[in-house]
Image (cartoon, rainbow, N blue to C red):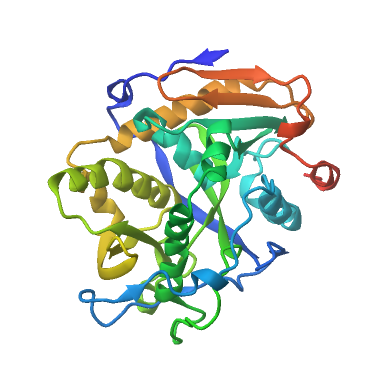
Length: 365
């Protein structure tokens, strides 16, 4: 089966029914990528006294940093571990009132949803998503494409340094508690993560998904009207090159702001802090982007409604394709810019197995 990806205008129109996600849990991954059923990796945003005339050198500590290993296939494992630890809670949050079935259509990571929403504006990167249906729930897992593997294997030293800059900026901007300061003396460990678990809904699709978040905003938590479990307490941290030309500003609005908006909007995160750096990797100033205002800043280069309407259509397509309720059956969805999305049922899905045996055995709902 295939699904044509039409021009973005075909998906424009009314904004779809999108329920603001609610946080129902969290977990941490330590410096060895081990799962912890707690929030010990949670960070708190720590703002400098002024936003201008900064001198944050993002190259500091690159030689001793602990780098992420992209070759290891983790798939959905950390998220599935959380689900197994919290089966009673999942059942309470998602149980059908009239039956014992779970009212969950999809389980996935936010990054997968971001990539799908961005499809209609993407002109460079392909994607590969595999799906398995088990006990009425469809699990979606993104896999590396040949293009992404080749790009990683041919990355230059400059590419690797620039990848590190984002992690170093997070270290400059976050601390272990609301009252402490950033600790720049410890090596950056790219393997560490703090993830939240969210319940969301897009049109008729109920989604259980997980998102890595950069940190909580102490200012929000100090507000007497703050909701402590709301995703409004989180802030995203980003870096970008200092904008000096009109063309750079157009590219920034057209490509970066779209991906930033999708990533934060899908998780209900209201604010992005960007460190603008020079070509040597030194952040010179900060700017705050309220997520609500980003579409207006993009000057009609993309439509928020179109991205989510397309994503809803894609999820409809997945439901039409993924019919067999069997944890060992895998459907592969592949898309490359300029082509339709194709779906095939894999005959021997070992390489693309979505659900591990330990999850199939221990999932009791």
